[in-house]
Amino acid sequence: MKEKAVIFTLSLFYFWNIGLYAQSDISHYLSGKTKEKQSYPLLFELTDLADEYALDSVYINSKDGTDNIFRFYYNSDSLIKYFTIDYTDPMYSDFGWKISHLYSDDNKVVAYLHETREQNEWAPAFIDSIFYSGNGKVSGILTYVYNNECWVKIARRMNEYDSLDNLVFEKTELLEDSTWNISSITERFYSGTLCDSMILTNRLGDDLKHIYKYEYFYNEASLLEDHLVYWIENEEWFPLYNGHRKYNNDSTLAQLLIREYTDKNWTNKYLREITYNDDRSLSTILNKEYVDNSWAETDDILTFDYPGGMTLGVVGFRADLYYDIITGIDRGNLSIPKDYILYNNYPNPFNPTTKIAYELKESARVSLSVYDIKGELVETIFEGEQNGGHHVRGFNGGRLSSGVYFCRLRVTDIKGKLVYQDEKKMLLLK
Picture 1 (cartoon, rainbow, N blue to C red):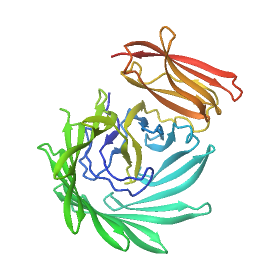
Picture 2 (cartoon, helix red, strand yellow):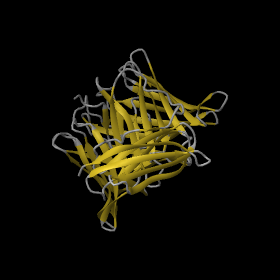
Picture 3 (cartoon, one colour):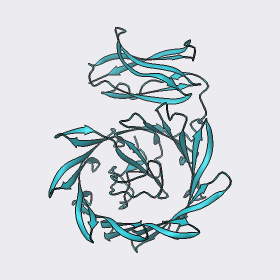
Picture 4 (cartoon, one colour):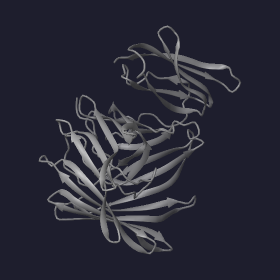
């Protein structure tokens, strides 16, 4: 089986929930099989797709229950046509994002069109136009926002590279009262192709101030092993965080431990654990925080990096990735389903977590429950009203013994009349 076409890197700090030009920290490919090393940061990055498999969806769970679902659609050249972001929380289920990729004749991304969905209608929000230098590197990004009448410029980013094509300088400017004003600057310093350090500068009031400094340290295989983060006060740098990485034998990243510098001591703060499928494609990311001398799942910022340099961030404690065979056919549209459908859980068999997807053709009252082989109720996963559309819920069988279980979906209309019921067999193997 060929390697799936998603390469991931890790990020820790300060991203907008869905937005542009947020600053990240560290990077290193989580796949041990990459075309070239990169030294710019971000959490996970979509590159050229493999011949056979592509990312199908990413489910991101958050502690407050407002989970995110990323679904990916491809064109006949196996390039991303667009992806969507939806929410499982009934309060937000009518709202969503859609980001379309526009390509040049040589398959370079030249623009990202962002749209929002309300009441099942898509409306333009903003667009990022991407510009390239003669050597094919992204030289700049120009962002327009749609004000219901026309497109208006709001921001731009300019990149500079050294003679080895390392990205050494990024400047972001905002258009304010017809004047371009610097918002932030990122400077990177290299030894060969490996980034040794990075300094982030932001505009505070009328002045540009250094905010953070990063130092990077690599092992003998040129894999990023440690990084240090500093903050500045009275023109003096003070340590803030340290990140230490552990790798699997195949050079895929297994763990990232973040320690915080407090009272002149390093103490555990965050932990990221990463798992892979048999073909080394990334399967899950789990975020934890050190509380009361033990690790507990916690929400942190997971960020997506795309080929033109755009980044998106979402909050969650767990990300699960699923893949599908590339067929060259658009995998459906995003309209409200025409029927009620309960899908088989995935993965199945599972240990101990799985996802259960279903579709509603209209708003209804839903009951999603799990029963054991005796027909006794094990858990009610969800019960309440939901809007029409696609929905996904997670189930954790950690407290259960191995065996056969059944997931049952019951749908009733606003008058309480049963309009749909189905159940699927699930196999828990520990």
